[in-house]
Length: 71
Image 1 (cartoon, rainbow, N blue to C red):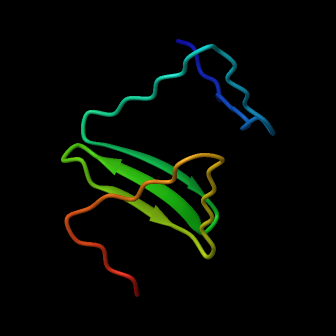
Image 2 (image 1 turned 30 degrees about the vertical axis):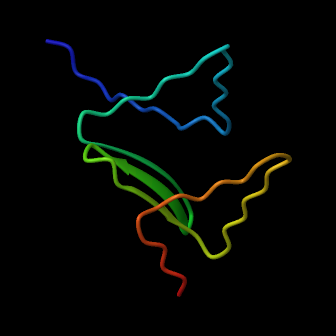
């Protein structure tokens, strides 16, 4: 019989470095930090939540949708 306690600390930093990184979830992928989050669902819905969201483009910035709702 082996008895023991497994303890694992979260690292302060986790770095992924590659030419290409893929993250895949069968139903949903959630990236969250504090009050900000980005959720990608299997049906194609994407939700971005934050207290301040900024986007910038050096070239064409295109926003396309059948219906756009501001506030």
